[in-house]
Length: 508
Image (cartoon, rainbow, N blue to C red):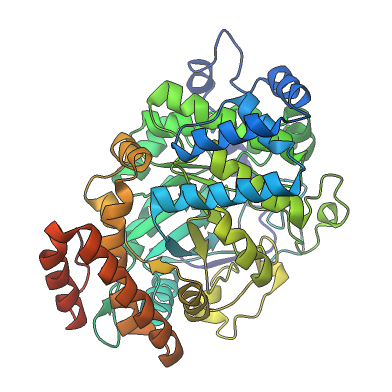
C-alpha cells in the first residue's frame, strides 16, 4: 500500500532522484524513428506553407471544406489556407462544415469525463506550470491507494462519471509501478447508486513520456488513451521553457513518445498543444504534421487532440504576461481548423475555459468535455464545496459547474451525453476504429450505446430538471434508431428496458 505523503523539503531522496532522472531517457528509442537524423516537424516547410497561403482564394477554401467533409486528412498547404481565412462569410462556412464533420463522424454525442490528479510531485521545472519543482509555495502530495479509492467513490458513486483522465507528475514516487497500481485500484471500485451501481469503465492517462518497456506495462494494466502533450512544437521556445538539465528538457524524447506508445501496443494516443507558448498557427500546423506522421508510420492517427490554453497558476509569474496569448476569436478559429484538418479525431475541450466560451466552442466540432472538475490533489473527497486552492493545483479552472448542470445544458441544446466505453472493450480501437470513423459507421454503434448509457446515468444521478430535459433527448434518439436502424431496433429496445429496470453496463 502506498502511503499518502505531504512533501515540504525533499532532501533525502535527491541522490535517488538524480539516478532516476539520468536513466529515464533511452536515446536508441528516439534515434530509430529519425529520418536520417531529422525529426518529422519540418519548420521551414511549415513557415513556407503559412507564407504561401496568406491570401486564400474562396473557391479553393470551399474545395478544401469538401475534402474535410469527406473525412480526408488535409495537407499542410490546405490547412495553412484555412488558417488565413478572414472573410466572415467564409469563416461561417468553415464553422458550419466543422460542425457537419463532427456529426458525420460522431453523431450528436458529447462524451464527458473528469480529470483525476493523483500526484503533484515533479522533477521538472517548466516555467509556466504550478507543479514545477522550483515552486516552493506548492503543497506536494501523492495519493495513497486508499485515497485513490475515496476519490473514485465520489466520481463514480456520487457524480456519475464512467471515464477518467488520470494525471501524474513526473517523479520516481509516481512512476510506472504507482501508475499501474492506481489503474487497477480505480477499475476495481464499485459503488451503489439510486438504481444500479457506479464504476469507472475507462481510464485514460496523461503522464510523462515513457520507455517502450514501461508503456508495455501500462498497456497490460488496462490503459485507455495515452496522452502526452508536446506543449509547444517550436523547438527554440520549448528549450527556453524547459531547463536542459531536466528530463522534460529533451525535446525529442517527448516528441517521439507516441511512436513508443504504439510500438508498445497502445492503440489509442492523444496529442495536444498548450496554446499561448508560441504562435498558434505554427502549433496547429505542427499538430497536423504529428497526425500525418503517425498515419504514415503506423496507419493510425491520433485518437484525440486537445487544445488547452495557458491559465493562471499559483506563484507562476510566466503566465501573467504572455507574448503569444490566444484570443477567444483565434481560439475558435484554431478549434475549427483542427476539426477540419484531422476530421476523424476526437477533440477535447476542457474546463480551463469559462462556461460561456465552452458553449460557443463545443458546436465547432468538439466530441469530449469534462465536468464537475477538480484538479487539486485529493480534491473530490476533501473539498466538498468545490473551491479551488491554487497551492495544490497545476492551474486555475474557468468552469467548475457540476456534471448534472452540464448534462442538462447539453440536452437543452439538442446533444446527448454519452457515457459509453463499449467500443474499446469490443476491440474497436486502433486501425479498426479509424476505419469506422472515416466511414461514419462508428457513429451508428455509438448512438445505440449513448442512448443506453444516458438512460443509465439519468436514472442513477440526474436531478429532476435534468431528468426532464434528458427524457426529451431520449425520445428523439430512440425514434431515430427505429427509423435508421430497424434491423437492430428490437434488440436495442430490450437492452434499453433492461437498463430501466436496473441492469447496468449493457452495450452493442
